[in-house]
Image 1 (tube, rainbow, N blue to C red):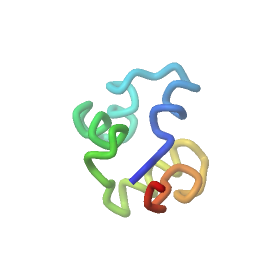
Image 2 (cartoon, rainbow, N blue to C red; image 1 turned 90 degrees about the horizontal axis):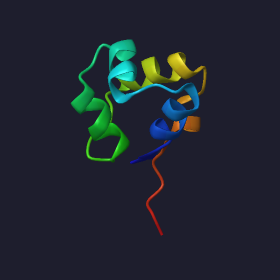
Image 3 (cartoon, rainbow, N blue to C red; image 1 turned 45 degrees about the vertical axis):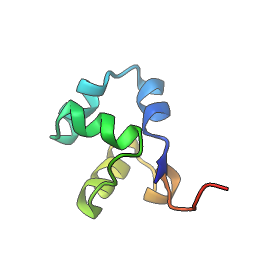
Image 4 (spheres, rainbow, N blue to C red; image 1 turned 30 degrees about the vertical axis):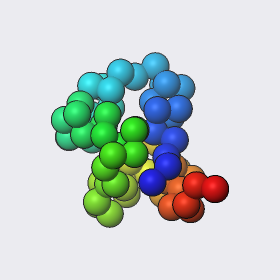
Amino acid sequence: MKNRLRELRGELGWSQQALADHLDVSRQTVNALETGKYDPSLPLAFKIGRLFELKIEEIFDDEPEA
């Protein structure tokens, strides 16, 4: 699943570890999310949305790549 996590994290000047700390997950989880190797659980997706004050759909794109 494509997402904007790296972009959003960069806008705040946060490291992967800083984002992980805000989400109560490991840095490895943030890396896996950003690289598309891991799709977040629904509760984690909502937590990410609240953190960035965006709708889930504004962060995650479930459309298949062309």
